[in-house]
Length: 130
Image 1 (cartoon, helix red, strand yellow):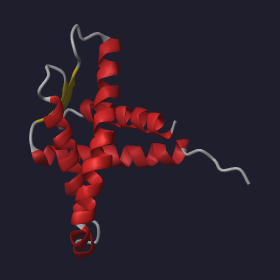
Image 2: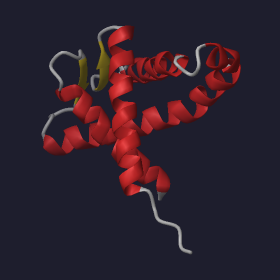
Image 3: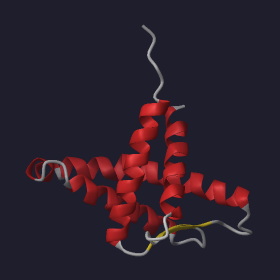
Image 4: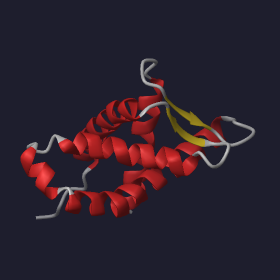
């Protein structure tokens, strides 16, 4: 259940990142491109992003641990941008998916997605029983 909530939050955050006209991040829905296909595309891209973040992100964070210490955690912005870029690379083989124009726009979009995920994660966090 937590994974599904995470995917929905990621999909919302990716959608918000695509709405900002300065960012060159787009989501191309699979044909015929109606609203339902757009929402499903966002959910699939968010699931791919969550899987990439879980598998590849964990490996990169373990390997880059000294860089985290050296940069006081600021390298995480670049790593999150890299993970978003990898997600875009994985979905570019089809005619739908995430498109990121450059790596640095991906870093900015990943920063926005991280902030939205953090805020919604605090709001939607399940409460523990006492």
